[in-house]
Image (cartoon, rainbow, N blue to C red; front, top):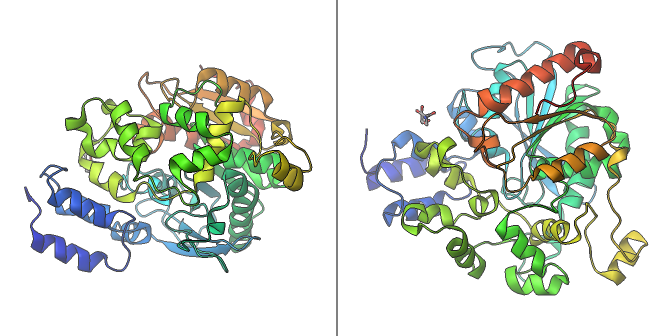
Length: 438
Ligand SMILES: *[C@@H]1O[C@H](CO)[C@@H](O)[C@H](O)[C@H]1NC(C)=O
């Protein structure tokens, strides 16, 4: 075991990882050099922090495929597939049901593998007998490409002119169609976290024909209504989100680059104990999603920092800000005149959740600052086919715990897998009488 990572080890790792580097490999190196992350990082953890998703999955000897999908408006999305298990359910020739897993805001497919085999949702699903497809939304680290537009163009931010409306309306259908086409299947299970649930609700309401392609949908930390959200950072963004120009002055145009004033402001406002939480308070994801010390595996902290945040547009945050502001679930508000042009109405239309006829299961926690119980109840009551609503049986369970909690498997994933299996064998008939467990 190394106490302090020597430059030699670091440079060896850099060579190893050169083929596929995680989004923050360089910054992490700086944090370690400057002593902001303390000494005890093993070689193995540091490697996991530095590798990108395909390399990471391959390192743990799971099968990995990379796929590229082009959306109808030209975005090129990177998908990652773990087609079967390593220790169990590992015969490549067996036909297995698909689970499509979609990440949240500022995140990527890394969310579901970075905790490693036995803990990461993607590995657990593969071992349980599923063909696992991990999506990546436009603009994140693995989907930062377009047939025509350039994400890094300085004077033209057209690449970044999207919110989670487009992710739900265009990205999800493209990735789902591609997955079904590649596997010759008719339907798949969908698991989403946070924005991965928002985008699904958008798809189900704007593209209702996609509901029939979904065997079941599991929303981890479901976000649609935010009227009662306690996220300080999103509330602040909400205060500036109308008109958009004010917000642009605060957090910029185009790509959301959380390394300016808002970060130091948010860090000071939200994180009191700066000494303990310094690296934490400079990570936007933790500032938005909150923090639960109890379920945080400190050993894995560098890996989380290496892979997140993974990129987003300013509009994705602005759209959530609008949801807080208007207390509804509406399409992106461009302002009166542009709304008229885009939607045919001066006001942004609301998403009609009753059109969502796919069977939906909600998994939520009252301690999550983004899913107030009242908002979750409103969502549940408006869905076209709500099947189950499950409260995580741990008082402190928070937003990011759905991906990275020490006990995520026993608290959440085991139940999700039981529901998947039940839907596979009996469909909705096996779930008669199930409505709420809280
Ligand atoms: C935390 O992560 C390390 C490294 O993956 C692992 O060995 C350890 O068992 C984890 N701790 C807990 C409490 O799960």
